[in-house]
Length: 261
Ligand SMILES: C[S@@+](CC[C@H](N)C(=O)[O-])C[C@H]1O[C@@H](n2cnc3c(N)ncnc32)[C@H](O)[C@@H]1O
Image (tube, rainbow, N blue to C red; front, side, top):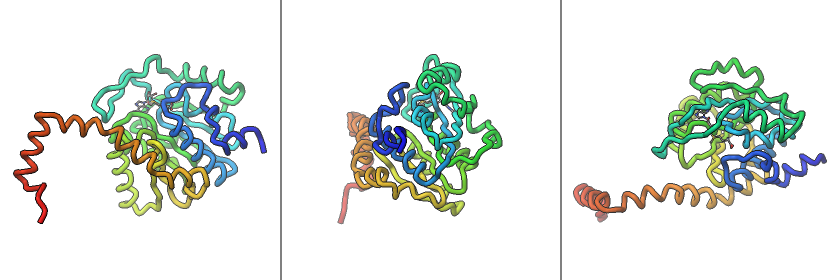
């Protein structure tokens, strides 16, 4: 067993050490668990991500010899809208900077990266010349973008593959739209949340959930469930402040929503 095999099997978080990633340790473990599962299912695979920033989420794929190609799609806008109502800014955000950091992190391992500066709404899926087995969506955090990015990923995905979202507690309505889309199209899928806000959709016959580190996280689903609700609790606290609370009480009374017989 190679050093990398051992590290990924142990979900070794030092695989994320070289470049800062926009994720908490539990999310990184879930991402490593998905990567481990995909490499158990396929001796070779290709990875595509939408939203790379400094390359933090790309770094575990560089030393993985089973990962043959990495596509990084990033629009790199000066500001990006966000479903939380506040625009986010990623300063000094360029593909050149990301590639420099990745080269430093894994010398000689970056030839397999193809970068595309743009948005899934305008990129031609034909630019992705290999079939993809694992997609990661972490670009613009709006419902519309999550849904658009998902459809792009579906277009370039292999017959069987995995599509993973980050920040599912933000783009949950977009993800719900993706699930509806799959149902309408009668596309076979399985979907579940992994700690903390990593949402995985298996497409076709791709039983990532059977892989022990993924299954372990799935069974302990209190982690993601509670984290997601608590991360949105500020909205409940806000609507429980006067005068919103008074208004809600009035409307509940008027509609009779608090009476049961
Ligand atoms: C949260 S960061 C990605 C973090 C990275 N995945 C990591 O774990 O370190 C979001 C990235 O999405 C990019 N982005 C914003 N809007 C986008 C869009 N419409 N399409 C693609 N990428 C976008 C931003 O430029 C930024 O680099």
